[in-house]
Structures are given as C-alpha cells and as structure tokens.
Picture 1: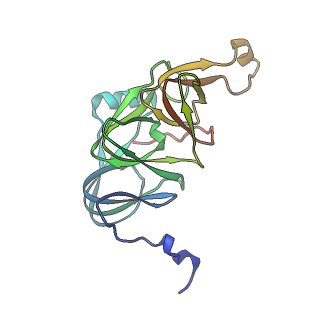
Picture 2: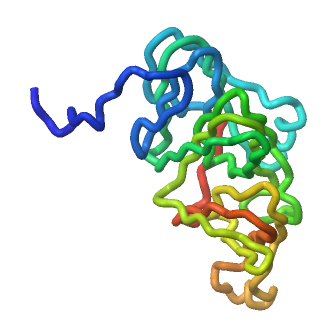
Length: 224
C-alpha cells in the first residue's frame, strides 16, 4: 500500500528516552515512565500500560475556577508507555524550564507538562474583574511544558522603555516577572456608541516577553 500519508515524518517511532518530544507541529509525544499531566481529553492515542485519571487542583484552585471559569481541567497520566496529545489541530510548542524560570499561561493554551513543574492558578494583578481572565496559570520549577496556539504565535519583547499592550482574548502567556494592569483605550461614551471593539487591553511592563495568538476569538470553556 502506498500513500503520502505513510511519509517518514508522519510515522511514530519508539521513544529514545522518557519525557516529552515534538511529534509534529500539531501534536506532542510523551514517553511516560512514572507520571505526567495533561489537559482532560487531549490524549489522541497511546500504547503501553498507562492509566488516565482526573487530577484535582486543591480546594483553593477549585474555588478560583468555579468563580471565574478560568483555569485548566487536568488529568494525571501514570505508568509506562507512550501517549500522544493534541487539541483541535492547534500548533504545539515545547517550553523547557531551567531552574528559576517562570511563565504565566492562559489555561486554554496548556496541553501537557512534566510532573516536576509546579502549577498554580494565580490572580492576574491589576486585571480587575474584566478582560480575558482574572486568573491564569503560573508554571515554575524545572521541566517541560507543552503549550498550544491557534496559528503561528507572535512573541513580542517587553522592556522598561517599551511596555506592550495586548488584547485580552489573544494573549497566550507572558514572563511571570512582568507587571500587569488593564488599559482602557476608549471612553465610556465611545463604548456606548459602539466603540472600536478594542476597549480594554492587558498592559505588560518590565523586562521579558509576551506571547500572542493571531486570533481574538474567546477560547471554549474547559469542562470538568
């Protein structure tokens, strides 16, 4: 049988070592030898002796998610084997954390991550009760995180001389050390008259970067 579908870049190969690797631009392969975490429903295939269980986030994080609709419904993947993760054919990227690294990520953009990383739902300081979410996911520690993005992401440097303002529905993540606040670019009267559709942005100041997706569509809520 012959077809372009059997091209070498589409063929899954045995993992050379435990951990996360890029299968292709739309999926991540994870060779599990113990435990990892992934968003619920993101597993598209697996082989080996693996168990998938709903992962609790603790009482504090659960209450934050219930109040805001933000956060991330996770599952723990345990055992020995290989699992493939993807979500709605979004582009996937691996972020490798060294000791001391930290990244704030919108929960809708998290695919899977090493159990060695610390994960917490944190309040976005200065964001009030409006915008793309009062709470986001803070990752710290050492290990790998797979993030996903609709389309090709735009990474914008942030410096003290050049703060960046981003649409709250388009932001994927940013350096955790950046200071955040809400910026209102329209007057109340302009908003009443219909406005431009760009009324409120998240302002990021300091030294770091922000990741933006080429879409302002609000992400679908994550079910429990």
